[in-house]
Image (cartoon, rainbow, N blue to C red):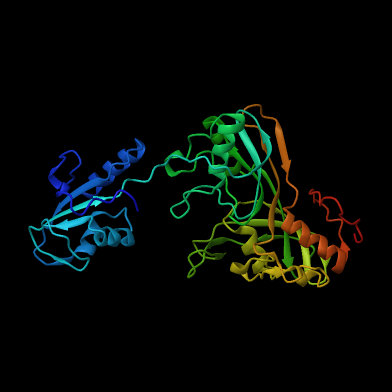
Amino acid sequence: MTGLPDPAAPDPGAADPEAAVGSSPDELFELYERQRDADDETPVTAVFEATRSADMRLDRFLAHRVPFLSRTQLQRLIEESAVTVNGRVPKASTRLRRGDRIVATLPPPPSNAIAAERIPIEVLFEDEHLIVVNKQPDLIVHPARSHKSGTLINALAWHFLHNTGGTLSTVGEDIARPGVVHRLDKHTSGVMVCAKSDVAHWRIARQFEVRRTEKRYLCLVHGEVEPEADVIDLPLGKHPTVKEKYAVRHDELGKPSQTVYRVREVYEGHSLVEVELRTGRTHQIRVHMSHVGYPLVGDDLYAGRHVTVGDFDPSQPDAASPLLVRQALHAARLGFEHPVSGQRLAFEAPMWPDLARAVALLRATRLKRVLAAPGAVLSLGPGAPPVTAA
């Protein structure tokens, strides 16, 4: 945390009446947001008066009055002498009484400005309205509370600054998500589109909303999938007990979700599956495939397991090395109408090297059959074997 005051400095509460804020959390939050919008890194000074007759711990008091900072952040402010009670440095457990004057110097609000970072990206297409990339695995799409840097948006900022010029759309800028029309999970690779203008953003987003986009994925799953083609039509929602998970839910919290899958190749103990999304729920493919008994390789959140090179081919010199330490999921194709010209566009991205090697090893050592898979459209790349079964 930055911008903490010097404990030896005078009480800041009376130094600047414009910075001093009363006890209203709304007023304080508005000031905080104004400074964020102006990229003002001046610490915010908040002045409160305890008005209750019953005593209350200082940390609990601040949690009520500064609800937009976490308990951990507030505890650290107290520990680092950024809070005084009646001019004295207190403890988190200090009990307040009516009339006590509390002065808290809050850290500067985090800026919404996106820092340009030199992160390699593979650009599939770009014009003045949009950019399409093949996102690498282990790359978060946009900054979040715990990840302020190292994201695709930071990489795009560098790309525009040093290569093509332009910027991302301002839609979502207030929450550090400029240009983000849709997202892929951190560990999912493949095709993504971002908007460079507001008009493009709204028009592409509308296509996703009304399901006029084409979304095809490749995934490597545990098990020899049967039937070899099917529609999984099961509602999805937040997992009832595990915060980061989703689940099939047949209650009012479940949203309609449809996944069409077609098996492309079958190996001993595994299958390569082409998936077509008719809806776009969070973790949809991962949850649906796991629910029907075929979890994605590497997806330990949904019953899959990580694999080593030796799991597929023990004769390899690096047999003990991890091969897939992320879910084996690749967004292989994305189709939509150009937001300005109206031309129908479709972009395909080859499998990322880790997934491509896994498939190559399985083909070389455990291939059982290759299916015609009516309705499948994805190229399986160089080295794909010919169809062996109808």
